[in-house]
Image (cartoon, rainbow, N blue to C red; front, side):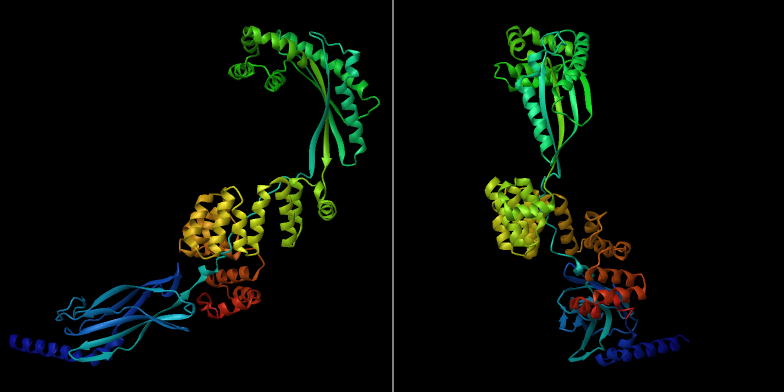
Length: 544
């Protein structure tokens, strides 16, 4: 019986050896090989196509003395690209290749290709050649994956560069002011105070405001004070009495210079703010010491005590500062209506020299032609040495893709976050991604972060890009979310351009919404470039 079993075993071994006794037999049995790829649909990430290819060799397939060369190849419309072959050997081969045992094995290898235009419609195949002694035979070609997804290449790479804003005000708040002075510890308004230069100037200002169609008095304030010397409760009572007499005086002052606006009357017991302002403006030798005392103490009584201790100084204060604080102020609060957009456009053609820096910066935003913008910005540079205008000249050139002129304009601007971001956008458009990344990192502002996300997408760092663009509703923000598996922002993208329609179509394809894909691609096909892309895009393979 044992002899019979040995005989059967020998027969089986002989049959197995006969099954793969030549390269031709391995080729014939190649259909028994199982191949796979992860991902099944190839994807371009950061300019490369990377995948894991798995081949399962069944038992009794690989001849123990055979050598097998497996060459991964991407085939596309522009040709084909081959990798260096993976080489495997049977158990009895003495070389240093990876051994495949006769009882079978599953082997996974990483493949990597540099992307080339045309690979968006391609496939990955394995070509095998088996060698045994002096003979060799090609195995049937095995297709393992389709490719390649290039959705990340939809990223908008122009970069965001913002104009520096103007501080132009449509309505400018102004004041006109006059004041009357009181004797020490008195609330009586002296007649000479009603005809003082301060009051006459105030009356003239009211008349000028009323004659100006652009100006309007919206309210008036009558504010009475006591100087910050003496007891605080007495000063509070004194300032209240002064507010009453000042209100009557205001009526007299404006009797022939009427003000059609509400009058707000209030009193301030001790005018420490005015005291500090007058001291700061004075030429007193010890004014810094006085201001330091004010900053050290907040209690009015302590302040007065400490200042009185500076005896020589206090004499000067009593003579030159304190009398100016025994007062009541008459304040007209005025709104000046600035030039409208239409008026600015007229003025830049008729009398541009009357415009200040802010008006020029605003006017430049109102014109459409780049030459007109540049002329206005240059006027602001020449007249006001405006750094913002100089920077905006560079932005105008960037938007016109005149990068050399933009760099020259930026060289005349003090470096800040906006300048570094603009330099990054220029580098990005010139294809120097590394330099662009450095500039955006230095910029460290909102636009710089947004532009850095472009580089993240190009590098395949989709999560980082999505995080940088979180909360935005831009095209790139929607694309970043799509690339990390969230189709909702792309599907909800509100922009109406052809590229946005294309991205919505990709989202719909991933969601299996065929009708939406067709509707969005019809809109996107207004762009010939996108129409050609759609015809090859693997994103739409299941809905064609």
